[in-house]
Image (tube, rainbow, N blue to C red; front, side, top):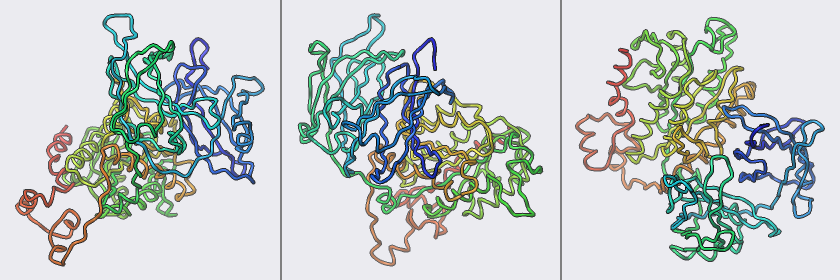
Length: 558
């Protein structure tokens, strides 16, 4: 806990099952605040007949994945539900010492899947800064009444916009359950503040509204009032829309494919693959798979179900390749494991496992561990796919054993790729310190790059292999559990709705080369260009590898 400054608290929630504690999730970090009000909510199935022990662990974030333990609280879901107004106030303790108080509010969740979409603008906001070269950095918070109407619950906080008195904040998609618990008459409060680095944000003004007041209007404007009820600018609600959000299955049924891209760590910290204590060691006598093989098999086997062609680009990093058709005396941090820069793809799960085994015998381990070169390569692939308006979503699967040495560049690339059809799954093998990975795995979508730009969404999932090394099914479940929601969130971010597949009317149409059946046909470049010009066909992902061959050859020459 910070002694000479305010704390940066966050809370981890755990539930006890079979005498073991399991993480449910964690709140966002509230910086420089001794009285934080967290926006994160947790949905837990409530069983009247069960105790359902809960533990709230309060930590002070120190940055770079490190934190100080402030204290914890143990209670039960029944205790919260049975408290007056379902509000439990309890001491936070570190040992026997009280280190603060925790207020937990429980509300029944109504079964409601609809979402509200709206855009919020500010205009004519006052400049709250004293220096002439500075201007207001506004952001807003959205509150709703609790069920007992005695307090407001923080449900959303926007990004800040630097030096702006007429801000246009990012479009907001939020479930009606979270916004107003399904009650369109619920009173909502908007508070606009001027962002301060030290955490003492200055209120500019506030206003109130109800969803049913504005739902039929294309635009709705309200006056902001300060603490003395003076008018201090305007808030405009634009593009109000209630809609049934599409599901992951909707996108699958409309033809969305998931393309897996694998990247494997061959740095020296893995240990020589010829020694039994190496993370890459293959025991040919027992046939037991090493951790890299187990993870590749568990995750690859599931994701390939959602790819039509079952082809997977595979890359290596942190070593000197000595492959049959691809060699380098320099340590490379992004190279094709099959030795083919023109087409780094391999066929199916067997191809993945065979290519890994082949590469393992033909690389010289080195280091350090850099993620950014791999990310830059995959960003090019995903950008090309987006530009072509393809219904393809990419999953970069990184297996690594240690600490990232280019964290700043990695975060910058992740934030830059948050508007692309891409998710990043990281599995940490071995017993190294993986605290930095938790920085990348930001479930609240608050990851910021070195220039202060905020990620549009959460696209990273990190899982330490050792927690599930004896249970590949559980490993795959934890690795992939966030992926469907990430895909839907991306599609909604770019306003891409699922479309129904049109069936071919006759057998002749079925024999015409299309994006769906292209792999069944051998067509010339001239035919492909003709199809391109007719608008019936766009270049395949293989075209990208041909276009990038020259860059790969330059890298190899270096």
